[in-house]
Amino acid sequence: MASAQDDPALHGCWQSQQIQVTLASQKVLNQNGDCTGEYDGSFTRAHCYNEAGNYEALSTYEVTDPGHMRATLIDPATQKPKAASYDVEYRVDGDWLIIKRQFPASLSAGNPDRPVSIQSLSVRVKPKDGVQPLCQPQGKSAIRIGRTSVSSLALSVPEGWQPFLVDPATDRKAALAVGAGFLVGAFVPLGASPTQLVFIVDDTRYGPTPLRQAEFVGVRKRFSDEVGNAVILCDQPDKICALLSRTNGPSVYTELVNVKGRVAIVTSSAEGKTKEVTLQLRKAVQKFTQRLIADNP
Image (cartoon, rainbow, N blue to C red):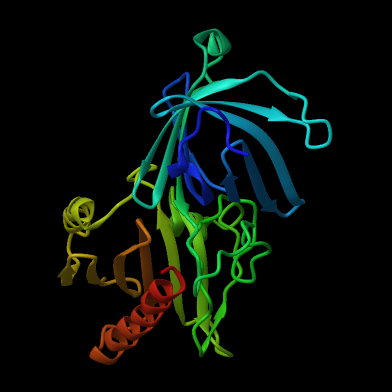
């Protein structure tokens, strides 16, 4: 049953894409978990998965004013409050839900590591072939390990490739490749020694906001400014790519692709400066970008 104050635009299942936490010190943390949230007019059901298992939470909510709602975490068995109610701002922007929460200044007084605000971005989970899927997290991943933040982007491994399981929290090279983003996965050719490597990263630098073609213009400009001596090989409304051939070190081919409102960075590297190596790198990246787009309609 819907509450007396409700917004039908909220109804349905939403998948978490990015959470940005601002601390009292003004430090900004970008995080994400394998989580979904489902609104039905009275309750919000949150489902999350991590290495420790599944987590579920139930809250009531009501829309207090347009773009504002009050939520209360409750006990699923008794439906009694487990914590004090809190207010948030929200905005449904097409297929995306943006939620902002401010914390009282008194909570962060004298503690620079306390959060002062949180902004989250979620994408609507749409029906497949006319059937609404269960509002559940993706679950245990076969393409990545570790406890770093999880990308919402789904990816099935293309034929001829296998996951290269590396944890950015413990591997310095992987940490440098991922940067502040979320690791989607790392891959090497099937059955071969890892002379060629593909890294796929969900870029978080643009914040918890949906990126469509209009916003992707700024992404393409930023990439062009950042690549330095690399050669831009393509520049399209939803994709930009470049090749970097260094005197010392491997050749690197990178594509930035707009996937489900996110910026996916797909990079392949291998030793060599020949045309054959360049073609090999481009084919690998294009295979993964095509799979990413197909797996995230």
